[in-house]
Amino acid sequence: MLKGFAITPPIVGRISIGRVVEKNGKRLPEKDDQFTLTTQVQNHDGWMLHPAHEAELKRTQAAKLRAIQIMLPFNDPDLNLRAEYVQFDRETGRPMAISDGTTCQRRTTQGMETITCAATQDCCRRQANTKPYGRLYVKIGGEDDLGVFIFRTTSYNSIRTLAARLRYYAAVSGGRLATLPLDLKLRGKSTTQSYRTPIYYVDLVIRDGMTLHEAIQETRRADAERQAQGFDQAALDEAARLGFGNGSFEETEDDLPTVAEEFFPGSPGDEPASIPHDKQPQPRSLADKLKDRTEKAAA
Image (tube, rainbow, N blue to C red; front, top):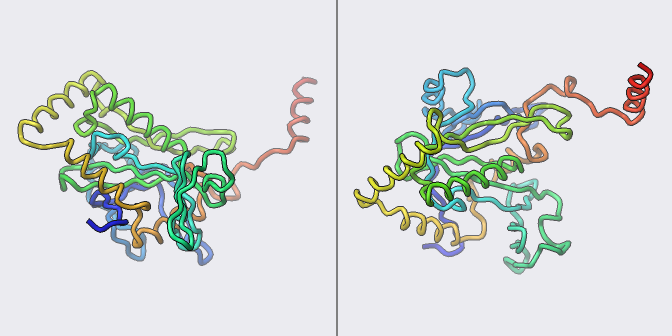
């Protein structure tokens, strides 16, 4: 195994919420309110749709893809969802530093440097161009038993929700995440920071039409069947763990331009619906708020 070269799951497709469009000669990310499943091939119109996209639309009989049937490749939650704080170079998309909130690894002229960062100004969490960065690996359909789709996100809401769900489901299923029938679901909410504009984040839920009790029964049955057939899930998890640990940064040189294009410039970390600028709600001044309150009191 090549040292310093992270070995990640074989990727057969991408899951995105939006696309990159050209505006005034610049390629900018435009968010959406639905999932898009693509291949890893681009043409002049953008990423080419994966056949699984149309298959999922047909299955759901919906105009927009907001729920996808998935399985997870690993039992360990931290292998299915890779998340850390990452400081990116805006020009190249190259990760310059990563932090788990306790220690930080940084690229320097002398090579890689590791520092304790929880309470220091040097930590990449406190630097510009730093975002939480998550990669979720899932299996869609039965095309490739070991191939996965990747969902990349810098959304606090998506990362926090996915991390919680993975740990909860691992606990209630006895650590059998890889055989638990799940749906990847798009949810929306409004916040004060979004000026009541919907923002979208990703959630993991039990497969539509099943209760949690039924899903646990199914995952136990499927796990026992796999073991009887000689499938060693524990060995697969360990192989993935060693592969991830073989390098400090998991993105390949080929992926870096895509990361830069998708997240820089980008939103503050959530996936808002795309709204024309002239129709976006604007923040109101303190004077306007006081005037409203006075008028209501007088009424």
